[in-house]
Image (cartoon, rainbow, N blue to C red):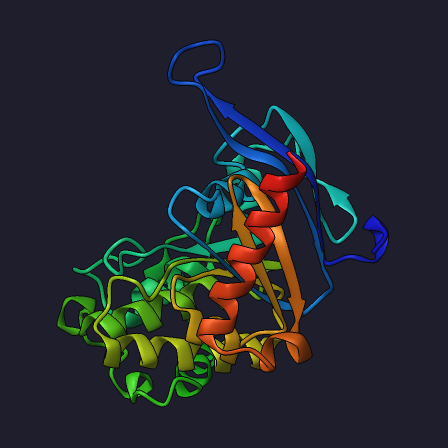
Length: 265
């Protein structure tokens, strides 16, 4: 897919930690893929495969040795993370990281909606803002739209992570990065957050890159499945291809691809 047509264009990402030492580690070894506008891709792979490092590179948290990152045809490779934050949002694994516990749901949303503004969120909040926040929360089906004056500290982990998701998408970013955002939750809360993710991303048609270790999630959801190993994308399946697979099939495909690569090398 040409860069100008891609929602996200990632080409030849390379990163080596501690080069020239006994601790030298190649974390990214030519990672490349394109995402069409509104496409939802799920990334899987073992620990150390380069999944979070790829997200760090895309978000600008990690300087690259080589490679290109472009969002909607604009090269952002040299931009620092705070500038890229204007076009992309990220939700991390820990549900406590994305929200301020001592503030209300409404105040947390107001801060996210006014990110970069100098005006006080308390003085600037209008009825139109509250209506907007209420509509965004209603999509979750958790009743949080009726609790906007409650402190976030009163929410469960799943509710809090769902709120973090709404905060990350309130301004409809060009790219949403989800870094194992259900891994720290119990199964019930994880399912809640996955459903919230599907509703929110689908409603706004946000281009999304989601890391998970849950192969059932990876098969059941999203438009694409990207499998990583040793800093490379080794498998790229579309919705129809992955829908035919079971978790066992996916493990088998992984071993087959890795074995073939070892033989070639």
